[in-house]
Length: 96
Image (cartoon, rainbow, N blue to C red; front, side, top):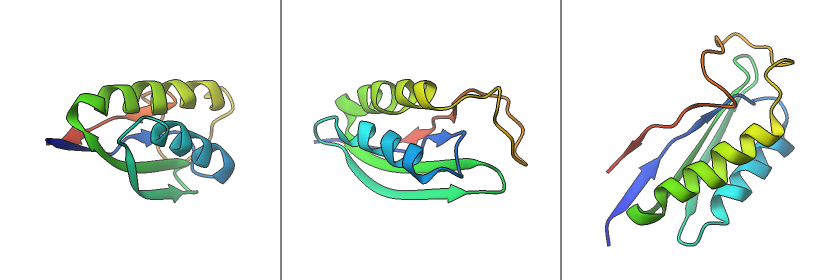
């Protein structure tokens, strides 16, 4: 089985409950395992590192992370040292 590691960055680094809800949504996809959650209050960003079978990565990143983040994060009220070029999910890199 091929696995993929994904490290999406979200525009929330101050409200742990929101980050936990995003992580919970990601991990609700079968086969996903959360490896790490990092929050940066100054930049108001978080990174949720997860691993899963390659055929579940898009579902976990999109339905689990990006969709949930867009429901929870209001960029009109967002502040932080990091420029807000993206959206609620700022970057979603992965590697095989």
